[in-house]
Length: 275
Image 1 (tube, one colour):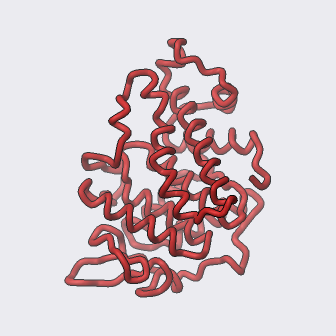
Image 2 (cartoon, rainbow, N blue to C red):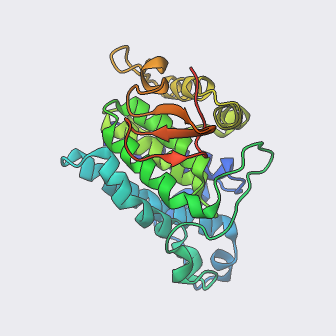
């Protein structure tokens, strides 16, 4: 992968896990990634941070496999659809090995309501999740612009919150899968900008305004020495207005819907975004 190094992985894992509240260090992340994590050691088995770091490494390996599929000719949306469940199981595989979770608990989407701390947004009820996820897969398959796929893919995924845990980490993996599909290097969303990150997602989810989140991602890309080129810079009205691009919104019977170019829809729950 272009300009991808072990240092990039350590930086990414440290920031992504720290955003979720884990107390990890670059040393712990490197130790786990190098295989110096032993389930027979009580220190590793009982330490949630070490288990989270190991799960991140396992899932990250699967994400790189999905990126390789794209480089081999697979469509980005298809690679994500095929890989998501694999990433999720890998993310929590240490908990299964430790006997904390049963394998069946990692099958399928969440089975109960979830709530996001300090957010006005309430994710869709569990019965709506499969339909919403099918809509997301179709959106990613049909949107030609990698940067649009990255920004909206991450946002819509965490808006749906399809799993009880791990949605943020998986959303950031999705962001980078889609960026890689456009030839962009891996982008780290930094812990020190967590408040801006959460605020931008809140603006998109609760206020139906995607612009702060799109700007945030572009700034983080620029912080890593890369930014969307003018050729790939998404025009908000192109993919946010009714009937335009993959993300067309419209009103029907008083309920807001989202439709990938007029096809299947995830009714009521996805917001009517505005530029």
